[in-house]
Amino acid sequence: MKYILFVFVLIFTGCATKGEKKCLDTDWYDVGLADAISGEATLQHDKYANECKEFKVSINKAGYVKGYEDGLDQYCTYKNGYQRGKDNLASHPFCKNINSLFENAYLEAKRKFHK
Image: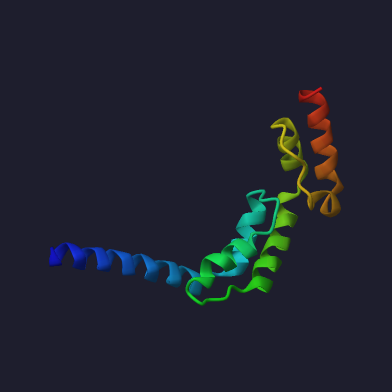
């Protein structure tokens, strides 16, 4: 019984340490960049901040936002706008202000595939 309790405590504290380490070691610029490039339509820094608050760790919000903005430059393309329209997804809320070709392609695909 003591062995099972020891293993449980070891596993439980190991998970907490992993989460805390992730919050401490994360390059928040890279996370923001990846979120934007993947087409994430909303900033996720509040979600990450809540996850890390448990460990009393603050995220680098400015780094995340800068990464997200840089990622939008890569995501907001004609090709991605067309694909979102073809897939009948909502337009990306930030892309029309970044690259008009994105919105043009989005609307073109919506008209073509979803009359």
